[in-house]
Each structure stands twice: as C-alpha cells, then as structure tokens.
Image 1 (cartoon, rainbow, N blue to C red):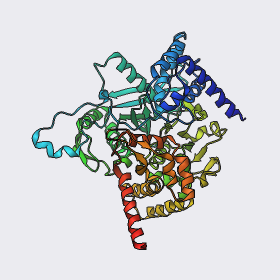
Image 2: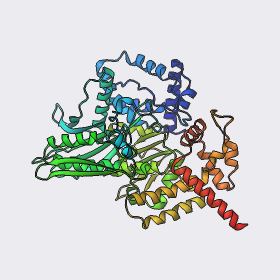
Image 3: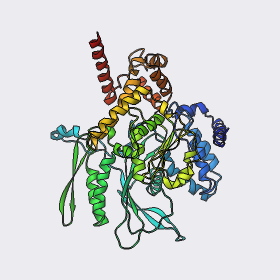
Image 4: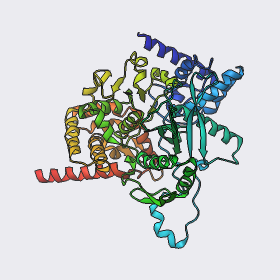
Length: 556
C-alpha cells in the first residue's frame, strides 16, 4: 500500500469513528453527498493542512445521493469539539469557514434563497407584452466589492482587505450579517489566491477570472473578479473588483467590468451611479438585451447594451481558451477522465486561463452536472485540497506545481504556453475510456470548429459534438424509467437499459458511466418528475431517433 493510500485509509477510519459517535451512518453520508461541517483548526497556519484533509475526507469516494437528514447532529458534534478551544483557534476557524463554501459544488439551483432575491415591482398592464424578455425576480448582482492589498502590521507583507462595498446591507439579522462577513472574508482569499507575498508594481496587465461559492445547502453563487493596477504614480500593489451574483454569465460580467474600470479611472464616485442603474435593471431572458443609461463627465450620457446569449446554458463558457491550450485529442482525454468523475488538476500561470478552462470542461458534460469538489482557482493556503481522495476539478497556479506533482491516481494537465508535456501525471487508460467509433465522431465534428466564428457559434459547434456523444450512448434512458401510476415515482431499469445497447464497446462504457453521481442525480430527477425531459438534450434525442427511423425505412 502506498503512502497516499495509507493516508486515505486513516482519513476514512477517523471519519467512521466520528460518524458513529454522532449517530450518523457512513452510508447515510455517502448518500447525502453534502459538504461536512468543519472541524477545529489546531493552529492558524500549520494545522490548516489537517483541516483540509479531515473536511474533504467526509466526501466519500462514490457519493450516490443528496439527502439532508443528519446534518444537524454532525454539526453539533463538531461544535462540541470546538467549544474547548481558545480564542485564537476560534478566529482561525471562522476564517476557514468562510473559505469552505467554495470547496463544494452542489446540485443545480432549484429555488433561490428569498434572502438573495429582491423582487421586482409589479408590471403594469401595458407592459405585459415585455414580460417574456426578463427573468422575473433576479437582479444582475448581489454586491460589488473592491479588494485592496494593505501592509500587514509588521510591514513586511500585504494582506487583502475590502475597501469598498456596494450596496451596503443594513437591517440584517445577526446570523445574516455573520454569514455575509464570512463570505466577504472568503472573497479576499479568492481575489488574491497567491498569498501575501506581493510587491508594489509599476505595470500590471489587468485580468478577469471567476470562481464559485457553494453553500452546504447546495445553493451556488458566482464570483467575478477583475484585477488591475489602481490609478496613481509610482509603484503600487494591484487591486481587485469582485461582483457576487447568483447568475452564471461570464461574458456579460466581463463587459460590466469594462465599464467599471472605465469609471474607476475617472473617480471611485463614478462607479456608484452605474452600479445602481445596473442593480435596478431586470436581468434579460436568453437572447434579449437590457440597456443601461450612464452619465460620464465630458462624454455625456452613454447607453450600455448588455445582451445574453441565446443558448443560456453556454453563457458562462469560453471554449476558445480550452482549444487554445489543448489539441482536440487532448481535450478528448480530459473529457474521458471527467465523464468518469476522476481527479483532475489544471496548471497555468494566468488566473483567467484556469477559470475559463475548468468551466469549459464542466460544460462539456452537459446535460449532466459535475457534482464533486470544484475550485477553478485554488488559493495557496488551501493547496492541500489536492490530497483529497474524492473526485475534483481544480485549477492551480504553476508556481505551486511542485506541491501537486507527488500525487497519483489523477490527471494533471499543464495549460501553460511553455509546457514540455501536456499530461504531467496520468493514469494511462484515458484513451481507452470512450468507445473508439464515438471518439472519432467527436473529433470529426470538432473539425467544423474551423469554419465557426468566435463566440456563440464556436460554443455551439463544440457543445453539439459532445452532446451527440451522450445522445448516442444514453439517449434511450426515458424508455427504461417505468411509472406504476399517475403521480408515482418512476423506477429506472438499469440492467435492461445497458443491455439494450448493441455495441459492446459502448455498453462497456455505459456500465461504468451509470455508476457516476452525475448520471445518478440526472436519473433521480427523471424518476421524481415524469415529463421533465425537456431542453436541448431532449430535442437532440428526438432528432436522432427520427433520423434512425428514416435511415431504417430507406434500407427497406
């Protein structure tokens, strides 16, 4: 047994003991798939490694369900353990708690927290015709913060601090205020993931990236960040503008940052009226545009048009960056590892490259959703998350490469321009995971990318190439979900489902794929909601089935 395997075994043994003490079975947590409560930190820095390992170990190797029972008991157990620690340890725990939500990516949002949705005013009768243009009840963002690097007390290093927040939230209950403070502290960490070793700069190329904050209840918020050098003379550290939103639309928020940066160059005071106008504007429906009027001194009133892509499920994705970093064959190997929910780490120098590539890889899995640990940019202080024995998609900056190369049983992908090899670490079977015939079909479909223009057309060509793969492998799933009566929960006939596949290589792949959590949760939704098969995937399935019928008719 290797050292890493021994470590994982110890983690699992310790976890089982704690669960037994709490009255929660290990199997129950395997089914739930929720993020665990946090254990205590023993010291502020040295013991963060231990906490990462203990926390991440709670996510079992093969999470099969997401149930909510037992969470209160387990949290209570850890609360008891924490109660005897001193104030310094408690301070460290609070800081780490703020980081934790980003370590898990839960289910797709079903119902937004009313706390985070400020309802729009009622529409008057003559505006009903415009109603379909907007997503009712959603604002563009929750808040904007500016994170600046300030000298530490000893004057030797910098630490990120929030120096501006819009809007200020007044009248919140104590627990709401405490939760917001934790989130804001976490933001500083993800805006400057490199740590505290910064030096003043005279030149700095601005960069835009994103990250995901996932709460224990599965609700998800997106962080969009633009780092730049603030106005002034002489050497100075960069600062970051960060927008928190429940909406996933990277391109739209990049344009918003362009406007924020333009106004910042004039005065911080110019940011407020623009963001206020934006906050008052309703979020447009896919394919529609909202116009924001904003006044700029010496330029007059400007009208900023913000348009959502028609394919809303691709609006957070930029496949161009993925294919700039990897060849078609390399993308296929990464996809193969992701579709079986393996551990994958991406390495790059640029924060924007990491966040765009990792979101693109997750989008290739549509209509399925990555359910495990998902951190587009791992902060330096949380680098030991790579030791987790459970599936993950992680983005790590290249200067931390030495701290991740001692791992095995994963795929380590170098995205940098000066790379010697793309796959620094691999399991070795990635090229044999997908059926050979379907691999060739994906590669052939990707050649159409050369004819596509940048942006939405490119995203459509790439996404359809991988969507057709799922149509041909598991597109017959609906025929094997049986309902005993109206309103009754359906039952998925797993064995009959994969036995219906004629190709041996495809059947071999599907038998593995149906064991993943992403497929399991997909089928659960179908079982619970008869007639829920809608959207692009369902449409492509119908088109494929019609084509098969026509081809069969021609042969006869």
